Image (tube, rainbow, N blue to C red; front, side):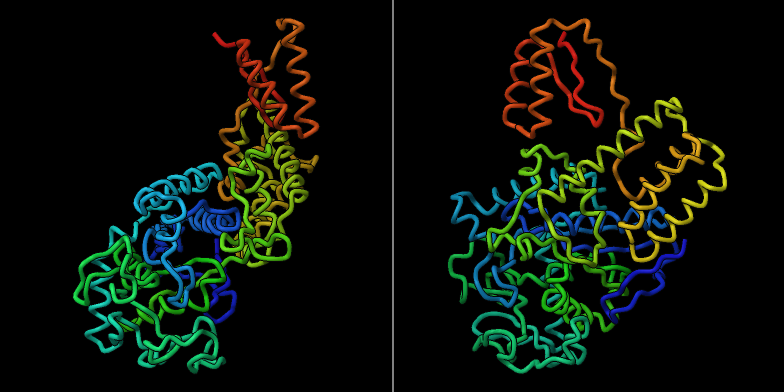
Length: 473
């Protein structure tokens, strides 16, 4: 399967070719673990997941690295503000280490709930300080750094291609043109590689270094950790579009200055999730967590379905109405797959017909053309509604599509049928009341009735085909 991806470096859809035959080395910017990930953040990891699944579907082995930022990410990417971990620590009264552990675990819980394949490696910034210091020393030995007011800066004037990812050669890079002037910098776009106590006297996380006791700037961690796990050159670097102008631009400068080589071949960026006409962001308080969606009665896979309904390079407008539509479509999909499993005794065709092969060919064409998931979902529904296909062929195609869509349809269980004749009238009435509460989207009442039933010895499980009860032993 020939893959074509949009490369931010050059702004073109390009044929995909790997450095090493059969292997893809991919680095994706990970979470800053000072708060819960919001669903806008999680859209990025869903994009990464679809990309990885597509690469593996195409036969590649994928070395997938996602960092955990637990130090050094300021509230402003231009080296202003304070460390987000320290800010969270002050507001919560917990140590930065406790905060890091708690929100890292919360992040992986969200990832698992969305059925996102876990990365090959999840390096933590605080475990790789030595690698960052060594990279800064390499840059220093090559003349790309200077010390000012106790901090070590990268001098962008020494790197002639600075800004090539963000097309900054077309912009004004003079001091003060786009960022506030820092008197300690030679150029407003120079960035900090290492902070010392001269600027942050009460910084909670500090390490010894050749430049004094302090801590690393944010940008250096991704370069240092990606090089450790993927080498000085690798295939794909992913992240949100907000990383293009500063974070990824600075990563390129310091990495290529250190190695003297092209660092990354393909840069892939996902667009924002939009809510109330603005991007979802913790800083503005304009954000929703996955847990809050679950509390409102949504399955995490409803959000996965919703996200796949928009192309990763297009802004996606979030609303409860659109998520409800995705929920209905996802439940309908699951019900149809369950019926196919019933029809075939869960045994897909071993030799599919020409029509089924045509659907798979369309699917492969659309997913390989820069991950066109909206068209893939359309392909899936056309196939499911095609009366010319046998149930066995449909189930085969469903499983093939799901290798990338990631709804885990292969393991979708056929719900056991309940015999209402075995129920006492009181229990049946409670179950009927709960079903009505769910139908009315009265989730609080539904949960209350579920607890009442549990106290009476009955467990209620919600499935795509409706609620299923079982009597506790």
